[in-house]
Image 1 (spheres, rainbow, N blue to C red):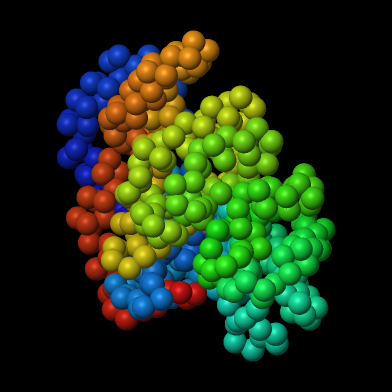
Image 2: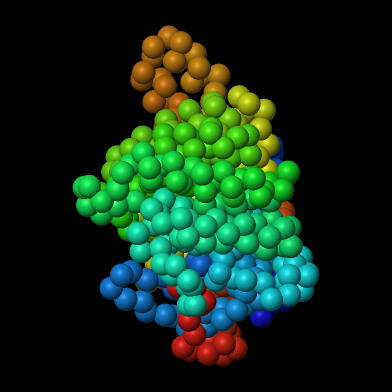
Length: 424
Ligand SMILES: [Mn+2]
């Protein structure tokens, strides 16, 4: 389904007066508001294909109905999100869940919705039907050469699909590791993994990037072969200039200082991309900004400061993606909330008074340094983000429009009440 333009305009008319009043209030004493609104208009977040269906836990999954049954329907769903917020202009695919039957047609469909293809994701964390060798004891790290070969070839196949669709990056997340002491020789596992990554790296087109994602634990619970940012950076450094570290917010040990990790990776020119989500305990994959919004702000503060220090383009030079999916919300509403949280936090980070912060740091004035950060964090920037949406031709209140248009009901009517999105 598609949202009719006049419905969107009707919706905006209904909220416009109240919106303008709030916007006037925030822009009155913010001389750089105009520039910030433009940055918000430009900022795009990629939607992962696997977040369009209801996520599950290892205990079960409760589908909400109307979920996309094919790659084409997943693209339609991202198209809906993008029509509602004009900030979700990219989709990130996962192979083999999203193998394009007719890549040309899939590309044309995406273009119709104004979408491009962000990073391609490979999968060696589960066995696929008909697969020759099992990944039970890891993929690129495996002690058996045939298993490693299969995993390498799979990643190269993913690159090929990505090339057909116009993607420009490959994200490699490995579940490789061990569950018990003694199970693995750490050095050998690292070497095998490095050799595999080197072969995959050699298959990258010239303008592609490879993102090496790390994760502290799960599904392996004793060691992980790409366990933290140090290990990821080690691989990325050995691989070469097209390899980068990817930070997934949920992939750290509790209380890790993620903002410091981000700052140093940016300093080294080795931060490639981001997977946004939120968590209370582990890799909980909850809606962005739902649990620890201040931590997200501190991360964005480092991102903005670090990108500006290197003269980077905020919209293009890092891969921005959501990686969240769970059980209890309508996945599309959940994604609207996540994109909104990202934009709000980005706007707050743009409001940080950099000059005053640097002066406070130089003077060892801890109190003022904290004041500067918290002044920005406590600024209500919702009207600015709404204004950016309005100017881009999206809805002032995307979730309100989603509900008043009964989009989920339409999707259930179209696709059925018992659909299961491929891949989950
Ligand atoms: Mn991730």
